[in-house]
Image (cartoon, rainbow, N blue to C red; front, side, top):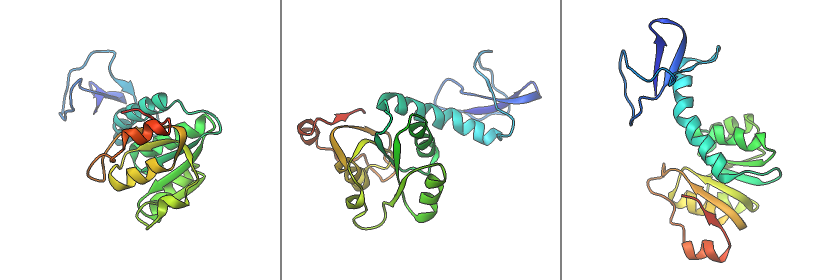
Length: 183
């Protein structure tokens, strides 16, 4: 995302450049591409929302949260994760936040997450009651432990590998448990 002002005039706007990114003092984009940054938000936040917001909304639409569902977000304190927490709460889901460290869990719980679990603590996943949806941006062993918390008929959406690799999800196990893997 690129932040800019319209020929130096206010309000500031943000836009994508149509590719994998770009930074420049000036950039040409289609006239309908820029989006105004609401008052009270910085241009940094506006640019982050274009990238992370698009990802979070796409994941939320694919997950199709329903009122009363339990949704596990890993990690719940980053850019995409914090937006997923809010989107799940908007439809009436209960959010189970996971993150690395108490200060990050506190941030997710301040957004409204009902539970917080430090995935750096041994056995963290065993303390979580079954969930309907897992949104996994960590991957690796943490993602696999989150996947294990899915109840039969649940939905698993991997969207990142902050832990170094995507979670080793056994497709046969997913099939046996009627879990939908949306990747």
